[in-house]
Image (cartoon, rainbow, N blue to C red):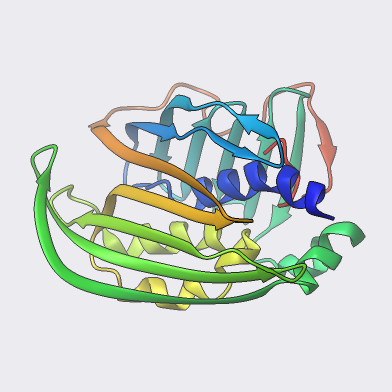
Length: 249
């Protein structure tokens, strides 16, 4: 059982990363960012530190986000969301709006049923400038209990209103990614309390006494036309059932 938790850890980090990677609305934009995941050791096994570049394309009712070997596509014009795994050329397809519990495979449904989750958000009142954007700080706490073990999650999220983002449209797209993550089912409503666009997220999670951390930051935002096919599924990929606990994601 503990080994299962160890192998679940990278998956939890990834699906959280997707949920908290910022996106823009209105016209086509390309958003460049960077993500650093600290090394950690658990049960005699280790995960090395990792640095990744992130790229997000945003168009009207469309979003494409690339992080490592995984792409997330949101197509509100088709009421579809796709999770694409390039390492094995597979993809999962979900109707929007969707009921996560109804679409999970049996093993993932069992894990979801075993999770007890709650969340809270605090506006700290702190401010600072990040990459020339005036930002304010929110503290997010998520309590996750699974298989008899607590996994507290803490995030410092710095947001800005200086990026020219339509926050109403931004939140409409953003909540679609949250809905695909079982750990954020309570956070969706709490997110309405956040004013601004996430520029920097500092994340930490304690699992079995081991702290796991990552930092993700927006570096640049540029308006431009997306290349043809940017928001389309790649050819030759095999459709699979969505599983948020799949450690490859």
